[in-house]
Image (cartoon, rainbow, N blue to C red; front, top):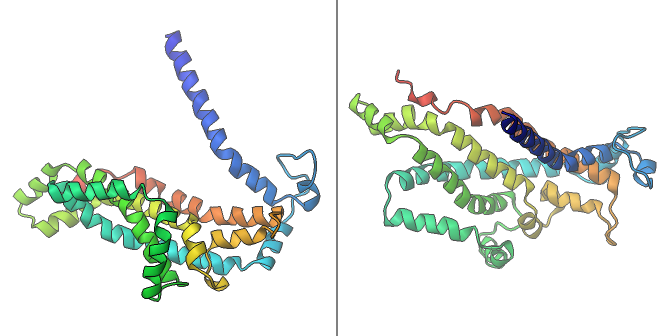
Length: 277
């Protein structure tokens, strides 16, 4: 009994320590965003700003086009998430239900593609987009994000499809449901949490991506938020810490809001499509 309680207490302690470890950078970012310049240069920094101010936020918006950059990031992230899910879902179903040489080759492609570093593909990718006249364009960036997110999205969805019992589809067929009706009424509701989780992964990956956006987007009004954040760092590497923290705090909010809105959809409803109507 005592051993079990000690083990449980140790688990909770480790969990709390892990949560503190994860939350520390974000909490420090929030604290820095509301600190005036005097407190930012203090030799004895504090967790809670003594004189909180919104000046850093006003200065950030005055110095850089954050709204336009956020809109560009939103369009690119949403476009990449939607297109990646639309392409990956039927591919994942075929790979999970019809295992064979083609499925194994596709799985191998997924694994190998994740080993390619960004630097290795950026030159041929730049040349391809140049021939397609998609350099310095958000649609071209969406295409890159889709290609980069597709392998892992496919990997995730294959696991979700394999978790759906084949017997449910067979039972629907016995009841007279056609193939399309079975996929729409039985399989699709069960895959909804996986589709949402995959879309969230693709969205956050595209929202936070920096390297491709830096190389492919040259016009200031088309740059995404991660690229614009680097403009708060001077030529000598000196950062305008207050406005940078304020802008970075605003840049993290969309991911947090999206996850908060759909986290119930991710964890709930796994058996929603298993109820026969």
